[in-house]
Image (cartoon, rainbow, N blue to C red; front, side):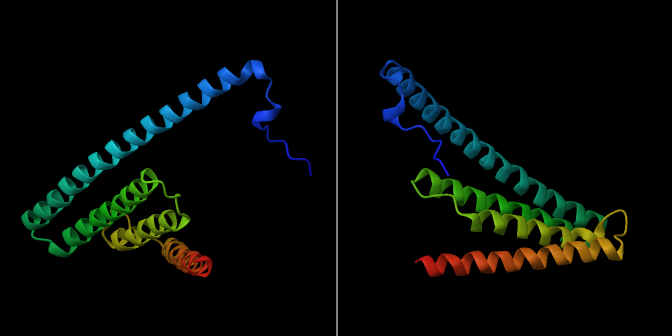
Length: 155
């Protein structure tokens, strides 16, 4: 199979300045994008923390601690996901590669969150819906274990 990537030597010399400028502009934009991502993640930490305390306060006022606890726990799991993404962003900005493990962890936490808040939803989930979410969490758990095992084999 022929490699279709274009190397620096294949570019006409007249395009060298344009190519250099384009690369620098994309690097600058990528850096700017990561600053925006970082600010958005920081903002979401503040928002989810506020939502957690609001859930706890609402549970205390409604005198339904189990219902409120499950909602608050669901909010904390969202905060956990954001924390994992922030850690990944920090590692990326320090020069490390983004790891698949982080994204599998985030999706797994979101699946578990769904299972935790299912009992307190307005509509009762069907058996099929519960089975799909439990099965999905199980498969994601296996994927997570396999990814971690593969990383340990590489080290």
